[in-house]
Amino acid sequence: MRIVSLVMLGLFLIQACSAFNPSTQLVTVNCSPKDTRVMLNGERFDCPAKAYVRRDKKLLVEAYREGYAPYRETIDYHLNKSGENDIAGSIFIIIPIFGLLLPGAWDLDQTEIEIQLEPQK
Picture 1: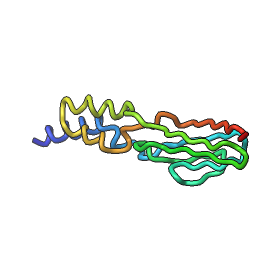
Picture 2 (picture 1 turned 180 degrees about the vertical axis):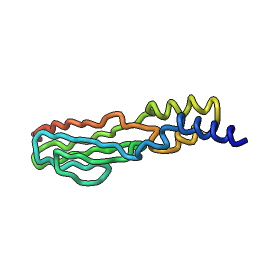
Picture 3 (picture 1 turned 90 degrees about the vertical axis):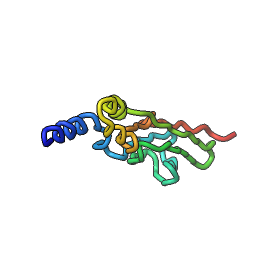
Picture 4 (picture 1 turned 180 degrees about the horizontal axis):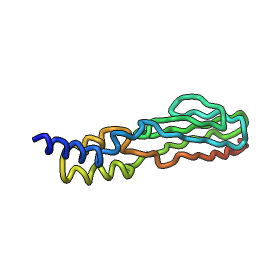
């Protein structure tokens, strides 16, 4: 019985990788012109900006500067390799499927954002 438990634990640790991934992901934002105000999910930053954001939620990016048209984009997320491994591991034992409920199974579609503001007419 003890050997079976150790094998099950080993399979869980190998396949459920997403359970051990961080819940946040680094996003960098560069802007033109410089000194643009950037909002990432409502949190204000001065550009250029670096921030850790949740990897399993959409990211709303907004940029403003006086005399320029505002910028707004939503960055989506997708299942990463760890999440795919969790799905594959669930074929053999059910435990890895729970990794899909955790942020580590996902990645943002874009982590390096370039913003080019256009002057208002």
